[in-house]
Length: 165
Image 1: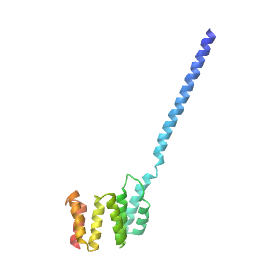
Image 2: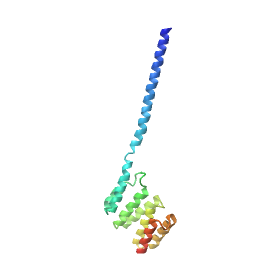
Image 3: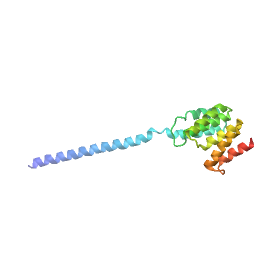
Image 4: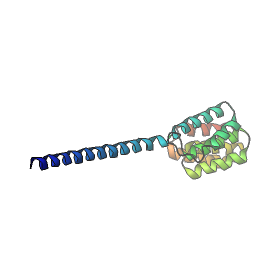
């Protein structure tokens, strides 16, 4: 009978060891897949840098380069910017390149993504002034006033632009 108990003890040890090994494998799998899911979207963090780089190109008046870089970001999902932000900057770059047809198109796209996009409302308003459409510019100015008030920089800049032209 001692031999039977001994065999039973060995079987229990084997079963315990097998359970421990299986549990270790299972936990390893869960941990590795949860970390790999986070690394799969690693490129997303570069999109914010690309967006900032494009904005810097605009500030340097390298509008064509900025437009090319921004076009690559149109269908990108990022926590650093919205699709409306990208369309707005593309519109701005086109406007500064004197391509008002494309500028208008991209401001419309920005505002279709976000009808209250402050930058697009301001820049589109400036474009309206450039096109001699002050009534449309004033409409944008009034919308900015409703959204953020008269002390906000978007409102002030468009108001100044309308007054100066």
